[in-house]
Image (cartoon, rainbow, N blue to C red; front, side, top):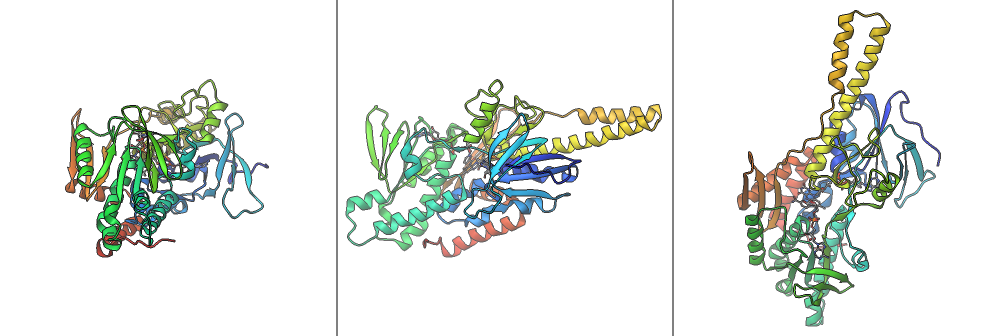
Length: 466
Ligand code: FAD
Ligand code: NAD
């Protein structure tokens, strides 16, 4: 495809791939006066993932937790180009990226290649399925906005189908068995929201079937939530027990068909578990685009977990032109929104510093050319030296929070040194809610989320579906 010219050829071009946590945080912190900035993402919005589990049962409306990327970029110093498209190929040698419009409506321009001076690679990950064919075909994931909406529609469908006249008992049991695979925070938070929905709404609107709905969470490891302390793991397990959520640890899902999952039990036997709705929250893996980028830099990129970066978030093998942030990277930091957003904000500051450096270097050249005094030149040189010192990325862990249902949350908040506050319960839930409301980027999103919470507390969740 033909190459397109950047907006202002005299300025360096930064191409950002993705519009998630890392990219959005970068876009907020970067000063675009000195750069052409182009954002490419198949989603033209930022998704606030911590509240996504609430969308699966209608506690929140999906639209309340997304922010159009153009809302983030519209007040920047210079225009930021935002393209709703999918990056398909990165050429780290010739420094170009090729992207395509994969949406339903297509025009004459579908595939474009543009050059970059700097590429910011923040495309996240895709769902890990371990090559089990049935997962993609029959299970629901919980990563994107439409995943959560699909779960909600299927959940209500299961309930309506179970409530249908003459439905046999055995079929009702299967349809109302909600199975969650993965005891990481995604699986736990989803199971928690589901239980809330059953307790507060299903019982009211579907009394004939509500008490037959069962939730089972399957985890291959001996423990759920490995990133939390033992106290909070125990607290979550006992809360789930009170809420009749069955946790099957040391059970590994090996296969999935349209009505059953096949698990290996702790004694090594195979067991078939029937389900109506299956949510697959078994972790993440690198996207094909990331694997392709790794293959293009075979000497430097050998980690199967993700992209290797140095302590300045520069991609190993392409240190001068590519930065990689967030879940797409393999670092010592957990793949969280917290780490990705700190990396995005850091890189924004780095670009601002590099722009200052460029300006100072030009000033220095001009001063030398125009015969400025020794002391004036020395002064600018000192400023150049200072601006050239780019500090490495430093992660500051603010703690881990998770919602566990019945208006209870758990929090592991680090204090000075090794100590941390491990708390669980209703007060932690209030903290969880206020923390998320304050983290939501815009006043618009804060108001929408608060209004949704109010609506649910007044009228309950909506059980209609498309
Ligand atoms: P993402 O936010 O995933 O963004 C990736 C972006 O790349 C997206 O905009 C996507 O559209 C785009 N993209 C994909 N393919 C392409 C392509 N080919 N070309 C261009 N763009 C592309 N973390 C926490 O710290 N706290 C939490 O409470 C929390 N809760 C979570 C709840 C859920 C349900 C989930 C799924 C995750 C949660 N996380 C949480 C993890 C957090 O969401 C991720 O760590 C974070 O999103 C990583 O940010 P990122 O920018 O690397 O990737
Ligand atoms: P995860 O990788 O943390 O957990 C996946 C779980 O699935 C693992 O415990 C794994 O043992 C299990 N599993 C994998 N294959 C299995 C199989 N075949 N059968 C049974 N169990 C299987 O994934 P996640 O929960 O999606 O979290 C991803 C990242 O996002 C993590 O870094 C997490 O910290 C972050 N996150 C944070 C929050 C929060 O802080 N509240 C919420 C969601 C996600």
